[in-house]
Amino acid sequence: MTHILVTNDDGILAPGIIQLAKSLTQLGKVTVLAPDKNWSVSGHKKTLHKPLRVRRVDLIDGVEAFSSDGAPSDCVAIALLGFIEEKIDLVVSGINPNANIGNDVTYSGTVTAAFEAAISGLPAVAFSLDSPENYGGNLNYSTAGDIAITTCQHLINYGLPPKTILSVNVPYLNKEEIKGFQITRQGLRLYRDALVIRDDPRGVPYYWIGGEFPHGVPESGTDYGALKEGFVSITPLQLDMTAYSLFEYLNQWKW
Image 1 (tube, rainbow, N blue to C red):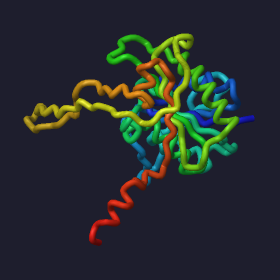
Image 2 (cartoon, rainbow, N blue to C red):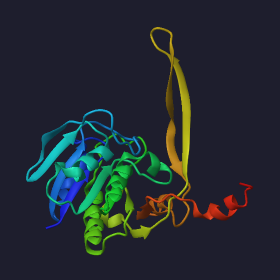
Image 3 (cartoon, rainbow, N blue to C red):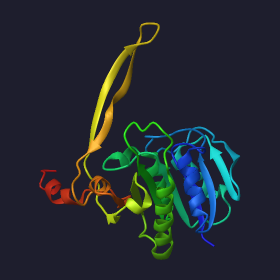
Image 4 (cartoon, one colour):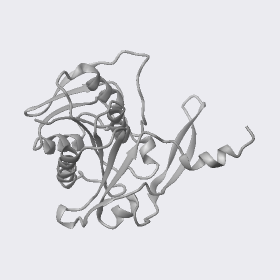
Protein backbone atom coordinates (compact mmCIF):
# COMPACT_ATOMS: atom_id res chain seq x y z
CA MET A 1 0.00 0.00 0.00
CA THR A 2 1.26 3.48 -0.85
CA HIS A 3 2.15 5.54 2.20
CA ILE A 4 1.60 9.29 1.74
CA LEU A 5 2.92 12.01 4.03
CA VAL A 6 0.71 15.13 4.01
CA THR A 7 1.87 18.53 5.24
CA ASN A 8 1.19 22.23 4.62
CA ASP A 9 2.22 25.75 5.61
CA ASP A 10 -1.15 26.97 6.93
CA GLY A 11 -1.25 24.88 10.06
CA ILE A 12 -2.53 21.45 11.05
CA LEU A 13 -6.16 22.60 11.38
CA ALA A 14 -6.39 24.46 8.05
CA PRO A 15 -9.34 23.28 5.93
CA GLY A 16 -7.08 22.73 2.92
CA ILE A 17 -4.97 20.06 4.60
CA ILE A 18 -8.06 18.34 6.00
CA GLN A 19 -9.54 18.09 2.50
CA LEU A 20 -6.21 16.88 1.11
CA ALA A 21 -5.79 14.17 3.72
CA LYS A 22 -9.37 12.98 3.27
CA SER A 23 -9.03 12.83 -0.50
CA LEU A 24 -5.73 10.97 -0.52
CA THR A 25 -7.03 8.18 1.72
CA GLN A 26 -8.51 6.86 -1.53
CA LEU A 27 -4.96 6.13 -2.75
CA GLY A 28 -3.36 4.55 0.29
CA LYS A 29 -2.32 5.15 3.87
CA VAL A 30 -2.08 8.82 4.86
CA THR A 31 -0.01 10.24 7.71
CA VAL A 32 -0.15 13.96 8.50
CA LEU A 33 2.70 15.96 10.04
CA ALA A 34 2.16 19.70 9.74
CA PRO A 35 2.99 22.92 11.60
CA ASP A 36 0.99 23.88 14.67
CA LYS A 37 0.60 27.43 13.33
CA ASN A 38 0.54 29.35 10.06
CA TRP A 39 3.91 29.52 8.28
CA SER A 40 2.74 31.13 5.03
CA VAL A 41 5.49 32.86 3.01
CA SER A 42 8.11 31.19 5.20
CA GLY A 43 10.33 29.94 2.38
CA HIS A 44 12.66 26.98 2.78
CA LYS A 45 13.51 27.11 6.47
CA LYS A 46 15.31 24.47 8.51
CA THR A 47 15.51 24.77 12.30
CA LEU A 48 18.95 23.79 13.62
CA HIS A 49 19.43 25.88 16.76
CA LYS A 50 16.48 24.96 18.96
CA PRO A 51 14.60 21.78 19.84
CA LEU A 52 11.40 20.91 17.97
CA ARG A 53 8.31 19.49 19.62
CA VAL A 54 5.83 17.08 18.06
CA ARG A 55 2.43 16.14 19.45
CA ARG A 56 -0.37 13.87 18.31
CA VAL A 57 -3.52 15.54 16.94
CA ASP A 58 -7.04 14.20 16.42
CA LEU A 59 -7.72 15.32 12.86
CA ILE A 60 -9.53 12.76 10.71
CA ASP A 61 -10.86 9.33 11.60
CA GLY A 62 -8.44 6.66 10.44
CA VAL A 63 -5.56 9.08 9.77
CA GLU A 64 -2.62 9.38 12.14
CA ALA A 65 -1.80 13.08 12.53
CA PHE A 66 0.88 15.09 14.30
CA SER A 67 1.74 18.76 14.64
CA SER A 68 5.15 20.36 15.17
CA ASP A 69 6.31 23.80 16.23
CA GLY A 70 8.73 23.73 13.31
CA ALA A 71 8.36 25.11 9.79
CA PRO A 72 6.78 23.10 6.95
CA SER A 73 10.19 21.90 5.74
CA ASP A 74 11.02 20.93 9.34
CA CYS A 75 7.90 18.79 9.45
CA VAL A 76 8.97 16.89 6.33
CA ALA A 77 12.53 16.51 7.62
CA ILE A 78 11.35 15.22 11.01
CA ALA A 79 9.10 12.67 9.34
CA LEU A 80 11.68 11.42 6.85
CA LEU A 81 14.55 11.34 9.35
CA GLY A 82 12.79 8.73 11.42
CA PHE A 83 9.88 10.13 13.42
CA ILE A 84 7.56 8.28 11.04
CA GLU A 85 8.97 4.76 11.21
CA GLU A 86 7.04 3.29 8.29
CA LYS A 87 8.54 3.94 4.86
CA ILE A 88 7.01 6.97 3.09
CA ASP A 89 6.47 6.74 -0.67
CA LEU A 90 5.13 10.19 -1.55
CA VAL A 91 5.02 13.64 0.09
CA VAL A 92 2.08 15.94 -0.64
CA SER A 93 1.83 19.55 0.54
CA GLY A 94 -1.26 21.77 0.62
CA ILE A 95 -3.90 22.63 -0.20
CA ASN A 96 -2.77 26.26 -0.04
CA PRO A 97 -5.69 28.73 -0.12
CA ASN A 98 -3.94 30.95 -2.68
CA ALA A 99 -2.08 30.25 -5.91
CA ASN A 100 1.69 29.79 -5.91
CA ILE A 101 2.83 31.01 -9.31
CA GLY A 102 5.96 32.58 -10.75
CA ASN A 103 8.39 33.71 -8.07
CA ASP A 104 5.88 32.76 -5.35
CA VAL A 105 7.55 29.36 -5.24
CA THR A 106 10.65 30.85 -3.58
CA TYR A 107 8.52 32.29 -0.77
CA SER A 108 6.01 29.48 -0.41
CA GLY A 109 6.19 27.15 2.58
CA THR A 110 3.81 24.87 0.68
CA VAL A 111 6.22 24.47 -2.24
CA THR A 112 9.41 24.35 -0.19
CA ALA A 113 7.97 21.56 1.96
CA ALA A 114 7.80 19.54 -1.25
CA PHE A 115 11.38 20.55 -2.06
CA GLU A 116 12.47 19.19 1.33
CA ALA A 117 11.11 15.81 0.27
CA ALA A 118 12.96 16.04 -3.05
CA ILE A 119 16.22 16.64 -1.18
CA SER A 120 15.64 13.29 0.50
CA GLY A 121 14.97 11.63 -2.84
CA LEU A 122 11.20 11.27 -2.58
CA PRO A 123 8.61 12.31 -5.18
CA ALA A 124 6.60 15.30 -3.99
CA VAL A 125 3.86 17.63 -5.11
CA ALA A 126 2.47 20.93 -3.80
CA PHE A 127 -1.18 21.91 -4.33
CA SER A 128 -2.50 25.47 -4.31
CA LEU A 129 -5.97 26.87 -4.95
CA ASP A 130 -6.40 30.06 -6.96
CA SER A 131 -9.09 31.47 -4.71
CA PRO A 132 -10.65 34.86 -5.49
CA GLU A 133 -8.94 37.97 -4.16
CA ASN A 134 -10.31 39.01 -0.73
CA TYR A 135 -12.76 36.09 -0.71
CA GLY A 136 -14.88 36.47 2.42
CA GLY A 137 -16.55 33.08 2.84
CA ASN A 138 -15.38 29.55 3.51
CA LEU A 139 -13.37 28.23 0.58
CA ASN A 140 -14.50 25.08 -1.23
CA TYR A 141 -11.53 22.72 -1.57
CA SER A 142 -13.45 19.77 -3.03
CA THR A 143 -12.38 20.34 -6.63
CA ALA A 144 -8.74 20.73 -5.59
CA GLY A 145 -9.09 17.53 -3.56
CA ASP A 146 -10.27 15.64 -6.66
CA ILE A 147 -7.40 17.11 -8.68
CA ALA A 148 -5.02 15.94 -5.97
CA ILE A 149 -6.30 12.37 -6.29
CA THR A 150 -5.76 12.36 -10.07
CA THR A 151 -2.33 13.98 -9.87
CA CYS A 152 -1.04 11.76 -7.08
CA GLN A 153 -2.31 8.63 -8.81
CA HIS A 154 -0.22 9.64 -11.83
CA LEU A 155 2.78 10.25 -9.58
CA ILE A 156 2.39 6.80 -8.05
CA ASN A 157 2.08 5.23 -11.50
CA TYR A 158 4.86 7.10 -13.30
CA GLY A 159 7.15 8.63 -10.67
CA LEU A 160 9.37 11.70 -11.05
CA PRO A 161 13.07 12.15 -11.85
CA PRO A 162 15.26 12.74 -8.77
CA LYS A 163 15.40 16.23 -7.27
CA THR A 164 12.20 17.41 -8.96
CA ILE A 165 8.70 18.24 -7.74
CA LEU A 166 5.36 19.31 -9.18
CA SER A 167 3.66 22.57 -8.26
CA VAL A 168 -0.04 22.24 -9.04
CA ASN A 169 -2.36 25.26 -9.11
CA VAL A 170 -6.11 24.69 -9.33
CA PRO A 171 -8.63 27.27 -10.59
CA TYR A 172 -11.39 28.16 -8.17
CA LEU A 173 -14.08 26.45 -10.26
CA ASN A 174 -16.46 23.53 -9.99
CA LYS A 175 -14.92 20.32 -11.28
CA GLU A 176 -17.11 20.24 -14.39
CA GLU A 177 -16.00 23.79 -15.28
CA ILE A 178 -12.29 22.95 -15.38
CA LYS A 179 -11.10 22.64 -18.98
CA GLY A 180 -8.31 20.16 -18.29
CA PHE A 181 -4.64 20.05 -17.34
CA GLN A 182 -1.74 22.03 -18.76
CA ILE A 183 1.97 21.43 -18.22
CA THR A 184 3.28 24.94 -17.68
CA ARG A 185 6.34 27.03 -16.96
CA GLN A 186 6.60 29.65 -14.24
CA GLY A 187 4.88 32.86 -15.25
CA LEU A 188 5.51 36.46 -14.32
CA ARG A 189 4.09 37.41 -10.94
CA LEU A 190 3.46 41.13 -10.46
CA TYR A 191 3.97 42.18 -6.86
CA ARG A 192 2.55 45.45 -5.57
CA ASP A 193 4.31 45.59 -2.23
CA ALA A 194 4.47 48.81 -0.23
CA LEU A 195 6.31 49.71 2.95
CA VAL A 196 4.03 50.98 5.71
CA ILE A 197 5.83 53.02 8.37
CA ARG A 198 4.14 53.70 11.70
CA ASP A 199 5.06 54.48 15.29
CA ASP A 200 4.39 52.14 18.18
CA PRO A 201 2.78 53.49 21.42
CA ARG A 202 6.22 54.61 22.62
CA GLY A 203 6.93 56.59 19.48
CA VAL A 204 9.42 54.09 18.04
CA PRO A 205 8.92 53.49 14.30
CA TYR A 206 8.12 50.05 12.95
CA TYR A 207 7.80 48.77 9.40
CA TRP A 208 5.17 46.60 7.77
CA ILE A 209 5.45 45.18 4.27
CA GLY A 210 1.98 45.64 2.85
CA GLY A 211 0.42 46.53 -0.48
CA GLU A 212 -2.24 45.20 -2.79
CA PHE A 213 -2.81 41.56 -3.73
CA PRO A 214 -0.33 40.44 -6.43
CA HIS A 215 -1.40 39.72 -9.98
CA GLY A 216 0.33 38.14 -12.97
CA VAL A 217 0.77 38.27 -16.71
CA PRO A 218 -1.72 35.83 -18.33
CA GLU A 219 0.74 34.55 -20.95
CA SER A 220 -0.11 31.29 -22.70
CA GLY A 221 1.93 28.33 -21.49
CA THR A 222 2.51 29.77 -18.01
CA ASP A 223 1.03 28.82 -14.67
CA TYR A 224 -0.88 32.09 -14.38
CA GLY A 225 -2.04 31.90 -18.00
CA ALA A 226 -3.41 28.38 -17.54
CA LEU A 227 -5.34 29.38 -14.43
CA LYS A 228 -6.94 32.34 -16.16
CA GLU A 229 -7.98 30.06 -19.03
CA GLY A 230 -9.65 27.62 -16.62
CA PHE A 231 -6.98 24.89 -16.68
CA VAL A 232 -5.15 23.17 -13.85
CA SER A 233 -1.53 24.29 -14.04
CA ILE A 234 1.15 21.64 -13.43
CA THR A 235 4.62 23.16 -13.24
CA PRO A 236 7.64 20.87 -12.85
CA LEU A 237 10.31 22.42 -10.63
CA GLN A 238 13.83 21.31 -9.81
CA LEU A 239 16.32 21.79 -7.01
CA ASP A 240 19.15 22.59 -9.43
CA MET A 241 18.80 26.38 -9.86
CA THR A 242 22.01 26.75 -11.89
CA ALA A 243 21.61 29.36 -14.65
CA TYR A 244 23.34 27.32 -17.34
CA SER A 245 22.61 30.01 -19.93
CA LEU A 246 25.07 32.30 -18.14
CA PHE A 247 28.08 29.98 -18.43
CA GLU A 248 29.29 31.31 -21.77
CA TYR A 249 28.75 34.94 -20.72
CA LEU A 250 30.53 34.59 -17.36
CA ASN A 251 33.47 32.79 -18.98
CA GLN A 252 34.04 35.92 -21.10
CA TRP A 253 34.82 37.94 -17.99
CA LYS A 254 38.55 38.52 -17.38
CA TRP A 255 38.88 36.33 -14.34
